[in-house]
Length: 231
Image 1: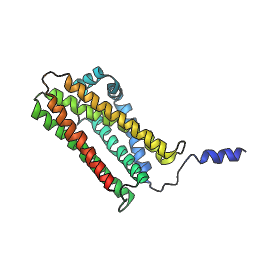
Image 2 (image 1 turned 90 degrees about the horizontal axis):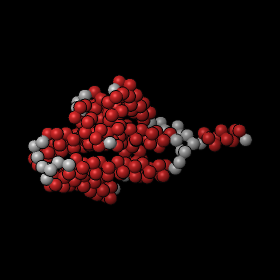
Image 3 (image 1 turned 90 degrees about the vertical axis):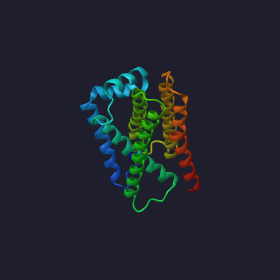
Image 4 (image 1 turned 180 degrees about the vertical axis):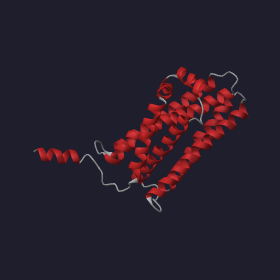
């Protein structure tokens, strides 16, 4: 009876994956979180609070915002690494694209795409901000909102990627769909927060927000959807 219970419990774990780069990426991501909490405890806590509190968000932006400081760079790396693993797992489940030539090289391609998309979005936001209004503070708010939501998504994805890869406590299908809905919620929350940022400024034309939605939110998803449908 005891042995049967042990075997049943062991069946909930899945350590047969021979892609040894995945635990390396997970380890790097966890170490980045530990480093951020220990080395920048107050800033890390304030960033987490800024996700829920709009006043804390504005205070963080005004007092500690800098996309080039060590904490921001580390959290951005965390987001790129862990989100790329999640995309790799989704591709492995739905079989959208062939893994070529190797799984690790395919993962590196995803990393490059995610990084370029993230940087391109920030650059376009800055360009649109300079085009439609010249207030640097509002552009900074908009950019930091994107950065903040990506950081939160990266933190949320760490346990999700871990469970998808090594645990079978719930079905993979259920976990994938729950994860996707959770990310959709964060995405919708980011759009709502972006609208609050622009609507709070009287001098900002709604044309800016509409142009932002079309160029950086709607169009990329339409392109991705068409590519997936073709596959």
